[in-house]
Each structure stands twice: as C-alpha cells, then as structure tokens.
Length: 134
Image (cartoon, rainbow, N blue to C red; front, side, top):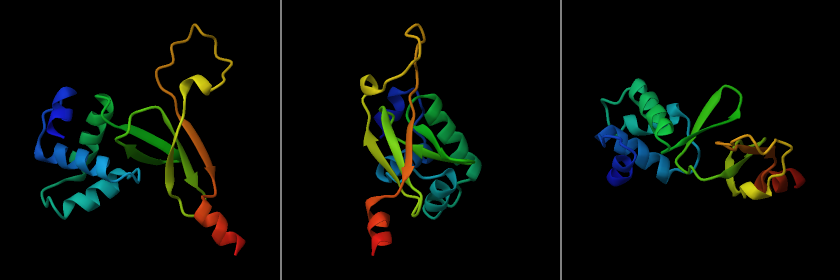
C-alpha cells in the first residue's frame, strides 16, 4: 500500500494508508461517510475533512475514481481501470463489470481525445429479481 501511494507522489501517512486500504478491501463503492464511520472506530482522531481531502487527493493522483451513479451521492472506487457499474434499484448494491473501450460504439468525431469513460446501468440484480418472482 505504501509503495502504491509513493508511486503516485502521495506521502503515505497513517490516515492515507488506512483510507486506501479500506477502498481496496471493500469493493462496495463506499461513500466518504461510510469510510469515515468505519475508520473512526480504529482512528479516533480521524476527521471527516481528512477523509474528504484524502479521497480528493486519490482522485487527483489517479489512485481512485469517484462514481456518481446516484444523484447527489459520491461513491469511491480504488479500481481505476475502465469498467462499468450496475446498480440494483431495489437493494442499491453496485456491481462492477468489464467494459472494452473498443466495443463501445459512439458517434463522437475521432478528433476528440477521450480521457474518461463511465458506463452505468441500473435495474434488478439477480437476487432481487428472484425475490420479486417468489
């Protein structure tokens, strides 16, 4: 973890290490509030401001990405590869799925330089779909 932060030019403080560790271990696409709530038990001196600032730094340095699949809710993902997100409309869980940039058809003129791609789907996950059929 420490080396990954240093590679991106981030000084690996205890708080930064713990937040990055949390993001990489919890693939649930947590909000800043969820990160704070979980880590404040372990680090009593942790502030919400530190969590927000650290997450912003991670995004700026390419160590994490912000997911805005829901209105007014920012979620965070340590997986910065090009991939899509599916959110279940019933349980709210967000699932990752693979996306090939080359398979996305677009009418965008090739003279544009695409730097970011976001693919979001919403619907019912298999669990909630089966639960509704019962």
